[in-house]
Length: 319
Ligand SMILES: NC(=O)c1ccc[n+]([C@@H]2O[C@H](COP(=O)([O-])OP(=O)(O)OC[C@H]3O[C@@H](n4cnc5c(N)ncnc54)[C@H](O)[C@@H]3O)[C@@H](O)[C@H]2O)c1
Image 1: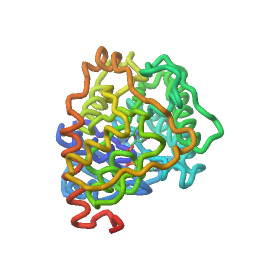
Image 2: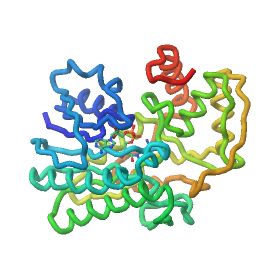
Image 3: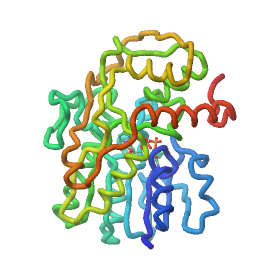
């Protein structure tokens, strides 16, 4: 049994990762400052003998004994990361320094949850790992994009300078149960609006595209990446290359929820990329991974989760 630290473990992806690791028989230490995460996401594990939860902010050093570290702590949606942009950059940069320092002391393998946002508003489509990106360094999204880029730099410098075993995963849009309902992300927005019979908000003309990866596929990719040989560092794209316009997504959600909501159009937010789609050839070759869950099946699971959440009002959803 390995002792595994998951930072941001009470969040959307982190809680699914804790579940998978426990199911694999590992010992999990979940740390979180509960900025966007919630105890609700992991409360079903509280009595598990190999699960431990610690309230901790990664911008401060942490002294624990573990064999592996998954560094996921960071708010991921624009409404949350723009709420306190200075803290967002600190979480990515100081958080990476603190977790890399811990990994260095323990000689532990460490995985960074990076993001497709490191590609910014890309001129290359689909995005491959060699592409350096087109990121605005002074815009309202920069605290997140540049914070994550700096974290990648730190990971590779610790690897080159201190021979630390690192894995860098560039995560593309992921959705599924336990997403925060009020975080402004498109899948949760559309589903919650459709279930409540409210207007569905489309930004711009709705022709911008995104790819959506179901959470179970993503976590499988993450665990496989951690299991790769020491000479494979990434960065590696993990996401679903299936591409949908916002209008197509809205129509599927309306159909699956049998909702009578209407579509309304609002101006595009600043620096919103027009297209985002991963090239996953590296993940296919190195991880033997590709997504398996269709958008339709993933949406059904997610809709079922939000139906329950709204019925219990368990996330304080405005009614
Ligand atoms: N979900 C996606 O589509 C997506 C895409 C790209 C990258 N990512 C990355 O994956 C990771 C997890 O994303 P998520 O979607 O689960 O988001 P999330 O907001 O649900 O989870 C982030 C977790 O980190 C915690 N956190 C934030 N700041 C912290 C700090 N200073 N110290 C300790 N904990 C802190 C939050 O409370 C939350 O539990 C993030 O690093 C994010 O950048 C996610």
